[in-house]
Image 1 (tube, rainbow, N blue to C red):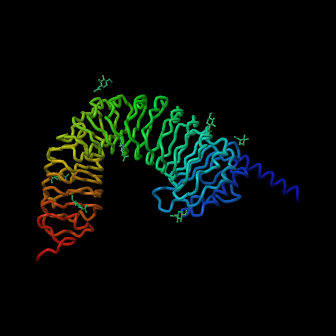
Image 2 (cartoon, helix red, strand yellow):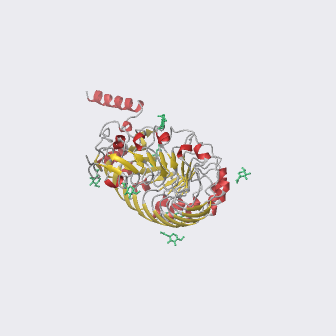
Image 3 (cartoon, rainbow, N blue to C red):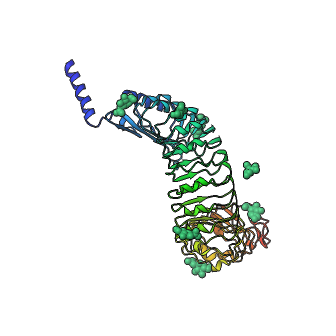
Length: 474
Ligand SMILES: *[C@@H]1O[C@H](CO)[C@@H](O)[C@H](O)[C@H]1NC(C)=O
Ligand SMILES: *[C@@H]1O[C@H](CO)[C@@H](O)[C@H](O)[C@H]1NC(C)=O
Ligand SMILES: *[C@@H]1O[C@H](CO)[C@@H](O)[C@H](O)[C@H]1NC(C)=O
Ligand SMILES: *[C@@H]1O[C@H](CO)[C@@H](O)[C@H](O)[C@H]1NC(C)=O
Ligand SMILES: *[C@@H]1O[C@H](CO)[C@@H](O)[C@H](O)[C@H]1NC(C)=O
Ligand SMILES: *[C@@H]1O[C@H](CO)[C@@H](O)[C@H](O)[C@H]1NC(C)=O
Ligand SMILES: *[C@@H]1O[C@H](CO)[C@@H](O)[C@H](O)[C@H]1NC(C)=O
């Protein structure tokens, strides 16, 4: 009887082992259950399959290898599903998962606590993404001892303090992502040691000082994002050595100055160049015409002057030259002819044309248009009734003259700003579906349709009446 029982147990254990070992090592199970115990809220049941005594290699997000050891741990919230997040802390018992090689914790949103020390106790760990949560406190000074790591991301947490200089020891790293935290101080010079790095993402912190001239050895770099910090000084010359393969160069919203270096024209693979919201001055180098792969170009909010070069790019997707000292006179032909443009922002660019003469190659992809503060005349009506997915149309401070009562626009439109123009006629009832409207300071007349917009959206017209303005006289 007893031996039969033992026999059955042995057979079933063998069975489990041969059917792909769905059960994991007891240490791994204990570590995972401790992780689950550290989670105090899981409203959408992300960890609902994690139950003691069940086959943990088949729990959601778990992958085992070589029998019973957990190799990868992938837990994510869905940013578009309300309630899909975890509240709690990261259990130090995750250090029991001795064969773990990668951790992906993405969009868990409400995980708090300091830098997870258990990362130092996992000898086979090489890939860690803990993104969009609420980890806080300093990065450990000995972070450099994670020297076997290939990829390290703590994007979108609340880490404070400096980037430890020991990052220079992370010589196997191909990705270092620390964007969207509260980091201060300067970029450590030792980053130059990370010769295999293809992604360096430090945007959205409070980093300061100059951008160090360290890029020459980092020959694999494809993504460089330093936007939304407090960097000052010029673009360092060694960025030039990234020309063959750099695809994303994002330096927007800092305090950078000087001219735009002409070496940028050698960046044959450059897809996205964002130098917006800095203090760059002088003429844009004519040689930028050679950036034939550029899809997204944002030079807005600088002190750049004429002439802006004619680019040879086949199809720009997104262009923002707003708020410089340009006098473009017209919307450039190389822009109008793009078959794929979705965002066109040329506010205060010295454009003096009539929109009646604007014949874009396509209207289908347009999502965003900002032509504010120019001297544009004519009517956007023909353009607006051809778009299908337009979300935003801003043209405040121009000389547009058309009958608003006849205006038709895409159902997708959310923002319409026509303030300070010469628009006449009635305000059509269709504006009620917008999220934001401004038609102040035009020549509109008649009873307003029912909307949620404040009086300032309608102020300064000839004879508009009805709520939120004063009642119409009967
Ligand atoms: C798992 O990790 C242990 C301890 O680090 C190690 O001795 C063992 O060789 C590893 N097993 C595999 C399959 O990598
Ligand atoms: C996030 O966690 C904090 C405690 O750390 C808690 O007070 C708060 O309610 C949580 N937020 C949500 C949306 O559950
Ligand atoms: C970084 O590497 C150097 C030299 O290999 C070593 O002396 C130092 O202790 C390492 N620092 C860390 C934090 O691992
Ligand atoms: C911007 O940089 C200049 C030096 O180039 C410095 O004088 C100024 O204080 C900086 N401004 C801010 C807001 O950091
Ligand atoms: C563009 O690049 C070609 C070589 O690829 C070069 O001959 C030409 O001078 C460059 N044009 C500009 C305006 O720099
Ligand atoms: C767009 O509006 C113009 C002028 O109001 C009109 O002539 C034209 O037929 C309209 N086109 C479409 C596609 O509705
Ligand atoms: C509309 O624009 C005017 C001036 O252009 C501004 O003063 C007013 O605050 C704006 N109102 C709304 C609701 O955006």
